[in-house]
Image (cartoon, rainbow, N blue to C red; front, side, top):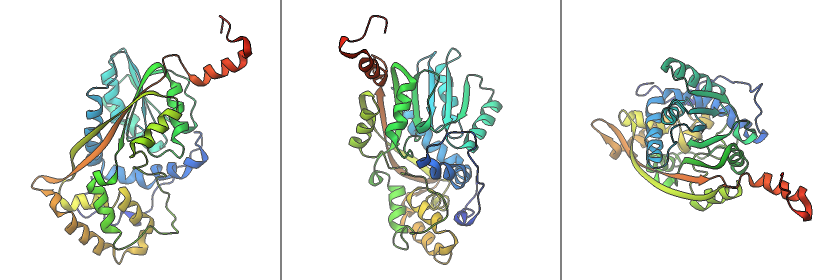
Length: 333
């Protein structure tokens, strides 16, 4: 992990561009894909320990009372560097397996390497844009730990997930609740806004709808209903998370990810002169989060649960009913 102060200039550096040559990506997801293959991947690597530990805390909370059963085939959506898929493979046991998918090739490459080093045999990974995918395998359980908030069209993406689940298959996804309930990100944004707004012109790719696109309970419920899911339930999860090894490290984090981090990244070296002032304001404005053993902040997510209809794929059923005509379905349908 990069140490204190090393990340203040992250927005200025170049990043590796990866062309998606063999994977079908929905046109409206191309910019998001470039972001996760480029600057966001590199930022994720720099902060991997703290970011993954926080994500895992919310993921573990979601899995306590809604987890795969031994022998289940599990789909991990937006698996990132693969630790969640490995965890799901362990829960599924030797008779089950987990398949992690992510649109970022570099994430999947890292996931494969880590799983190989750990010698986990019942996990696999694939570069997939879930919004553009038609899964050929059938799964018992689908999980997403902050992996479903960046689709340009989440209804289409989650419909594809539902179609990949067996009748009665279960979905469990973790998404951020509103900014006001995630003060470490919201406060950083309000402080940064005192100095600059989002630029009208920029060269770097953005992450699309953003991490709070599913913060509203009614919105995420409607998305899942339109995707064909039933028995939709939302469980609120409020956790204290560690946002850095110390206050300086936590400020490095919010200057690199989240709403404030994206604005700074999009401005790049055009705001180098005021960047130290923004950093000083963040250090002052977030000082109450510092403790002797690190920086901590309240965080809040939804654990969103839903079920694929027991009677099977409603799209297929509707097509069969239409093709059968007034006489209805025959016994051989």
